[in-house]
Image 1 (cartoon, rainbow, N blue to C red):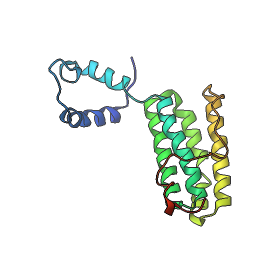
Image 2: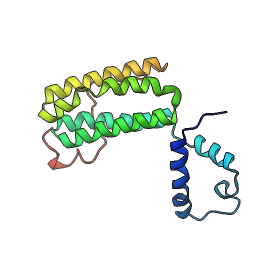
Image 3: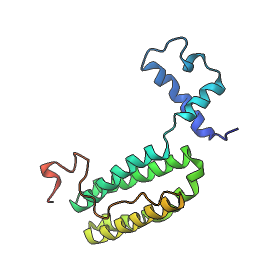
Length: 169
């Protein structure tokens, strides 16, 4: 039997009425007709996989680089915070990866506070390079060493950074 995080179960239980209210639910829908165990099993099965979380982290990785490069320091800070939250989500949804995710959290973001506070591109590049290294270490520990990241992402997907007022390229 799976061990389930009680906080997560409570959060999902509180969110269920909101989700149910947003769309019509037929009487044979599992959200209405399922046993509590069936509902919990389906909710756990619907949690995002590591790969789905990593897709978003990858987008934020690219955006973080360009936010720093363009001097969008508040936006860079925001990206680091959102990446950390995603890794914490991964720890909840994929407990087998929690230890390596914690190693990553403990090391990967250490250089950003000073670089962002000083608004220093050189320090930022060092922090970004160090984080990239921690990404590669974590991928290796999780049997995915073939997943690498560019040192200098060629573009960012965020329209925030592609506005004319975003800064100089």
